[in-house]
Image 1 (cartoon, rainbow, N blue to C red):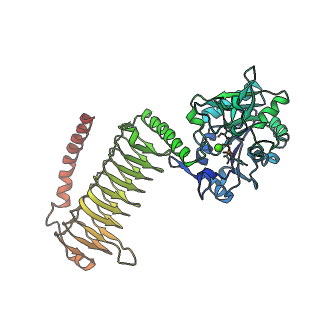
Image 2: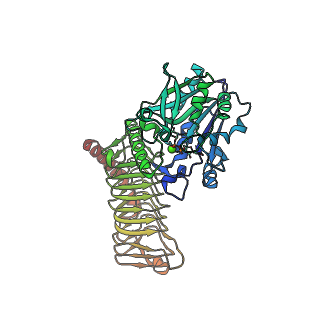
Image 3: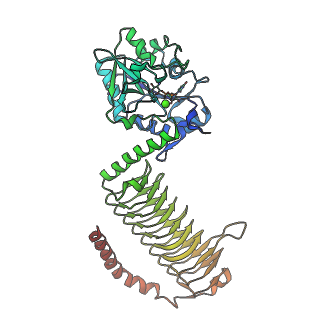
Length: 475
Ligand code: UD1
Ligand code: CA
């Protein structure tokens, strides 16, 4: 990889700030935007680039950030926070003799995209300037450093808001805090940065003017989409970043062939993956590492987190967490699918059903008003309305096993630990414990497993055909 571009590239992410305006007990860069901590967004933007080393400058709550970052980058402690240039100075000893490019970014700018970083680096390299800085134009530039240009359009200096004069204050072009430096030029200029300014800080932005004094050139790369370079300093900024990123995620998902009926009420996390021709209905939240297959219908009003959903699955008005559903499963309306649950192919969970740590067999059904916890339900079982597993005895939980093709009548209690045999028939209103389970009749109320299997094959294909044509025509 390194052979492709001769020059090496390292990245420095500045993340030592107190994040005072966040008013938080956790470091700013660990706050999440669309389900992913800000620092992870920044690290992800560097991934497609050929970066040989990433340094994260940490200070406030250093250990928390370091633990989170792990092996992905080298964390360098900035004991005293004396400004952004001072933060970069912390990395200086690692850059001695380094003859390449240094990308400097802010840990609190989570929306930056790899493509913009790549062109920033390319610009500096192709124009052989000492620095290329990413800027953008904002109608409301308050809070950002302003970009002052030379007559030849190169950048003369960046003035922090608190140091602006009345003319500079009105400049709409702002510094995004993302730069690509020639390493040698950066190291040289850092030595001349002073803290003679309104905030008594060592500003990295001063490097720009210093380079000009050396006779070096600094170029600006103007980001066309200002939402990409937003810096998060407060929870209000976070909400704004969340809105922009959410829209970006939804657009990406729609472009990949997923219908989102109402983007305004749909919240999908950054790492979620959704298959083609799936339809997401309003008021739906899909979080974490959820993977959804093709041709599903999710929502309205579904909250789903860290779950794995197959193809052609229908989920309505439900909460699904750390669970899995195979192809052709139906969930809800009004179901709670809790962690550790596996719903196998063509199984069905109906209205007001809660399941936890349960393996529901193929074509098994729990159509109404039931609670199953720590259960293994065999294929083609029918669990009638009002069935409960009594899985918790006040101190520990126990398992319920129901064999294949069993029938549990309405309003029954399965007192765990209990094992119900294949084909067993529990009448309505049963209290099934281990001893009673052995006495249950088998196959008295339902057709035998053999018979149902025979008919099931023919029936099944016609049923699925019907349901799939129905779905097509409804779209
Ligand atoms: C900085 C820029 C400003 C730019 C803005 C973009 C400077 C002086 N100003 O301002 O021109 O418009 O970003 O968002 O660079 N940090 C450290 N150590 C420190 C101080 C800061 O690591 O001693 C880190 C912070 O954690 C943060 C980043 O540097 O991630 C920027 O610092 P911040 O204080 O947010 O600077 P701004 O005032 O936003
Ligand atoms: Ca900032």
